Picture 1 (tube, rainbow, N blue to C red):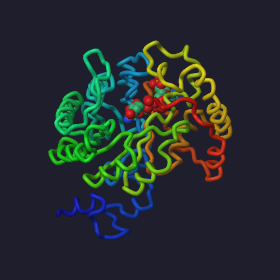
Picture 2 (cartoon, rainbow, N blue to C red):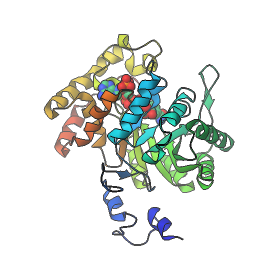
Picture 3 (cartoon, protein in one colour):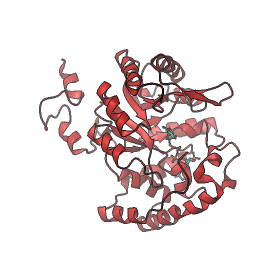
Length: 355
Ligand SMILES: NC(=O)c1ccc[n+]([C@@H]2O[C@H](COP(=O)([O-])OP(=O)(O)OC[C@H]3O[C@@H](n4cnc5c(N)ncnc54)[C@H](OP(=O)(O)O)[C@@H]3O)[C@@H](O)[C@H]2O)c1
């Protein structure tokens, strides 16, 4: 085996804790490190050789779900995000029925070496954009991957997630097909989204899983317990989606009237009239902490997720340049153990399900 494979694929190096080539000491301590010279601190995803800034960017809202978007503004935001040091971008083939991947392909032409891109497959959309089911069967995955590569206009996908575990396909078969894509050089690493602890364990027996992406925020804490523990046991990084509670935890959405008719949140249980009112208890708490820390509510919401562990990578979504720097500043906010315990003891329970 060549030395570089031996030392870049965690688990293969036998040089012990202090091997400089495979960063094993740093991986064990679960700390960030400066990767490639001067720049922002980067953290390894799972046991892969992908290292990213812990705050990524979710691109979904640039194509769908949160009202109208302006394509020029989205592309300008993607470029400004690279300039600001954001290097971990999240999309899926189903966002805007392919629109989001195509947008990213245009925005990142000539810039792929500066970023790590994650996309997902599984949800099928019909011609009118309706949801037509979930397919994570081996044949489908191979076709979906070719289509994503074409839309993205790139040769390889850094991190490819199954958007959901398909109840009709054993997870072993899904990740087995994804491993074939790794072997064929079409994708670099494998991820799952919304998988259970048991599914993570089964999938990990079949292939190396680099990341699990699931919702995690002050108002969505279901992953605490067995799912986060399984990730830690299996060396799987946790990518936290909707860390701003789909915008609610920033305090920017206090009434349904501010949402466009096409906005998905109008159908989300937590944004129904009565639930929205009850969920304002989160805002009172967050605004109090923001005052103490001289920060904005969005920064507190993100900092809370970041402070839950060095293996957690929040991917807040924004279409606006002005919000990139605000959100990035969350990386500088630290909570002591006592502060975290205090926040936890005051956290309300969310009114309404996640979907
Ligand atoms: N795996 C899955 O099933 C799944 C599901 C949902 C999402 N995701 C991924 O996770 C990413 C993030 O999740 P998300 O977009 O659902 O929710 P989010 O990050 O919790 O919130 C996004 C919303 O917050 C607003 N926002 C962002 N920064 C703000 C700030 N500083 N102040 C006020 N408002 C702010 C955005 O509005 P503007 O855009 O107008 O700034 C947008 O409406 C998505 O883009 C997607 O890539 C994955």
